[in-house]
Image 1 (cartoon, rainbow, N blue to C red):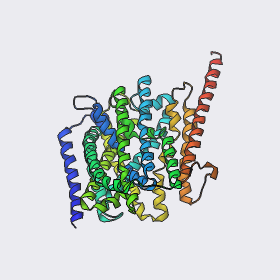
Image 2: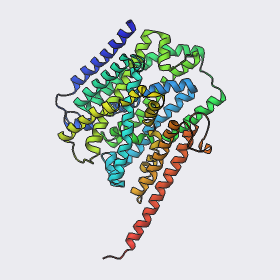
Image 3: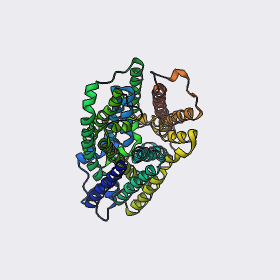
Image 4: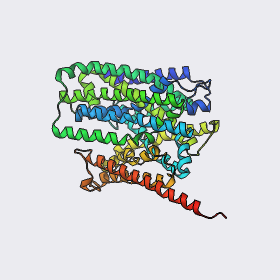
Length: 479
């Protein structure tokens, strides 16, 4: 009874703190540039360290924290290293988007895509990232709601509804500006909570020693590390939570800010994986994000609850503000300063994704087959978008156009869908030789390496054919 009361009191305190912060920093009427671009009331762009804090905490989402602990428990130290590798995505994005901004003068990724590949390709890209945005909603609400009750319980559903509704409320008020300002406070809070967690599990982990894994487990962990490294070349470009922040400051500020954000968020994730190491060392069973705090009693359970709320809330508001921009500006290829009409439309999109994004939580009632299939369908985006690597990283090729985009984009989409289909039908669709490495990620590593090579070859083929079209058009006699 006491535990349940304190848990809900923590939620109330978290909500009250953010409500106070939002009301103190957000004017009653937010201008469209504030809503979509995060500008201050005086029209100034966010400072570098606010950008760093926002980008970092937005990628330390609740599901990633839970994954880091689980991978540490499964693979030992290499599990945390492997998951931290994904945060090198900030470096990939910083380099590619810096050149897109400075060489082309583009103000958003969709604007770049329309200029380079055409409107159809831009909208295909936006449909792909819509999967990512939907995934961000349910995956974060699911993780923190489990601290308020078992899956499907009344407490679970109330927590999911309350946090979602509250986050929608303050994002409707200020859009990206509210997201940035709350992110700054959430980053500080998350850092303090991480220190408390490390101070709690650290002595026990030092006493028990780092867990030793067998050769097969080590090989599986290295396979996962390789998979993470392969995906960092495409992964960042389909996450508008990250890429939207690449266009709200000057290019140099963005570049430095993204490097710092990658270091901070990747370091955070690696350090949090020590929770999984502790669970493995002491033989705790089940999800380490739940089993480890249970070993230390109510105070530590509340600390874990708070860090999950903080990370989930920071990602949810960023997801909502990105959805507003995608639905109100990017889809229609809006240029120039944002308008009040676009801001109104963006607010309706925030409400829509808050509702649709939580629908996969209902999969608990859909049976052993249908439920997991629905959730899996929202988590294939990493493999589906492997073709984005050449689309962005080889965009400097002058003859690459719409054909190059399609020859790179569609193979990745097909491979991602096939990976889902394998789990739905319960049997393999890829031949055994596709697997590289060992363990549960061997097929994924093979699919991503061979798929990336195929997507890149397709892109280059499109550019080569494009050069022939240019030569042919020049050879035609003038009318």
